[in-house]
Amino acid sequence: MSVLSVEHLTMKFGGLVAVNDFHLELEKGEIVGLIGPNGAGKTTVFNMIAGYYVPTEGSIRFQGQPTQGKKANQITKAGIARTFQNIRLFSELSVIENVMIGYHCRLRSTFLGATLKLPLYRREEKMMHEGALKLLAEVGLTDVAHEMSTSLPYGKQRRLEIARALATGPQLLLLDEPAAGMNPNETQDLLQLILRLRKDYDLTVFLIEHDMKFVMEICERIKVLDYGTTIAEGTPHEIQNNPRVIEAYLGEVQCA
Amino acid sequence: MDINHKRNVLLSVLGTMLVLAVVQLAGSHGTEYQIRILNNIAIFIVMAVSYNLINGVTGQFSLAPNAFVALGAYTSALLTLTPAEKEISFIIEPCIWPLSVITTPFLVSLLAAGVVSALLAFVMGFPVFRTRGDYLAIVTLGFGEVVRVIANNTQSITNGPLGLKGIAEHTTLWWSCGAAIVTVFLIGRMVRSSYGMAMKAIKYDEAAAEAVGINTYWHKMLAFTTSGFFQGIGGGLLAHLITTISPTLFTFFLTFNLLIIIVMGGLGSTTGAILGAILFTWGGEWLRFVDEPMNLGFVEIPGIPGMRMVIFSCILIFIMIFARHGIMGTREFNWNWLCRKLGIGGRAR
Image (tube, rainbow over all chains, first blue to last red; front, side, top):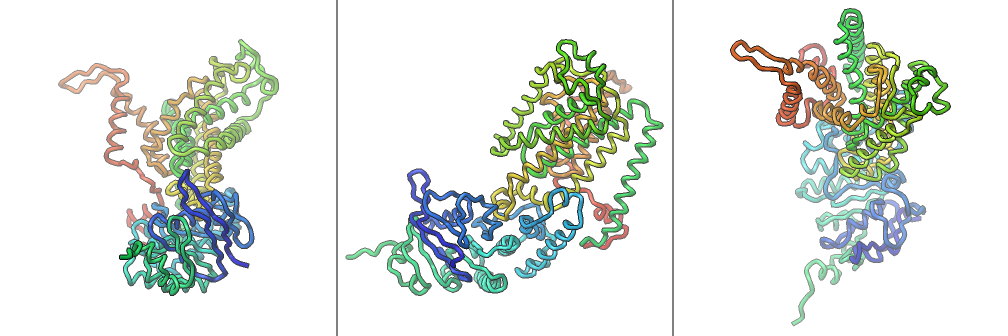
């Protein structure tokens, strides 16, 4: 059974068809990339999978269960975590708090238990703290655990966002341009990190990225969107040599 | 987690005892005027700290605390007034049945005030949290006004514009300060728990909060309802301090005062809300001298009534210019910080 199964997904904003008849099957443990020129509808696909937009048509099934009618927070709880294209950390919380909050949705204590610090909450709080420390170590942010999240450099903020997403306990990770704004070294580190996390946390990864070198290196399969329509699908090698993809990125070849 | 945890708990207990000792001293040696100001401060702390939970911590700009304070005040007053007293007060229309015969002890009436206000907040929350930002402010402003208008027009329950008179003066320093301490303790704990963290997350970025699985709707409801509960209790204390309540007491002006307190103290900071309540209440009284004629030696200034409000406004403007995020910003007082400042104990992290 596939982890995520998307069929006939269409999103219309008024007269604009942002995404048209999008299909996707994600098998467990895969890393699949979604590429396409600016405005092709990539983030719209993410927003629909993560429950931010209600698709105009089509269905999304996560581990066999339809996600229709579920809110973003319920989908996260079901096991799909995401990061954002423009980093969205909680600015005035510390680095470790930003990760700890990811565990909140799985908390069993009620607000009364938490306020009165009942034994269950004490245990859970300790678990959250230790889990967050472990995740920070995983992404290499242990030394800045108590800094303010916004004081971190860009690359570290990206990694913090990934740690926060992991704290929610996902099976599927949606990464929206994880390598944006990173230098080649940082990108290489990120690549290793994603591969390692997939192995350690049994993740399936679906990512949007513009850095072609990164995408070609990390993804097992790639889908290409242009004006909301899927124009190609296949292994990195196939995509690189697909004339329609080259056309979408570089423009049509004029025949003399 | 915190290496100084034991010391800090000890200091908190000692601090609370110090406050209680001051209360005891003020109660036995203070003038009636001083006790009144302390009572006001304590009640404003209850209201401001709980108001800060929804406005500052959760970032939902509610303008309805006057509704909860009003409901709390009326609920508790109606519960402590004896049937005979109600019969005398309600001269235009008699009080409706269950209320006309019930009398409860003060504590019960306070808790009932909290519960009824929390219930109102809960019900109000359904429509209110379908909106955001400016719209939420306007919707809550509307609800605040609605409650006041209802109080004005339900003659047989609230005695209308005549208000309720002769409420027993139950609110002693022990009651008000006790309520303030309990409120600060419980709300402080809640804000520091992961529920509080989730509320802050909603304030900083609601979409990201959804993305980490926080049910933003219910967390806003939780903050709003909790805030309503304590504001109701604040209202109950207020009613039993001033002994006469009428709808005019709970206009938007009350909301406005609370807003000044939490903005001045720093939106999102419980410490700030406490400082704000103290400065606002005590400062307002202290500034009374400027209303009176003054002799500066070389020049005689005649008393100008209302002058203190002008000066008070100037102070507020200065605070907003020089400490734009209020006195505390979103920071909180903590013992580690104090000990570091005093250079005693505590290893730096």
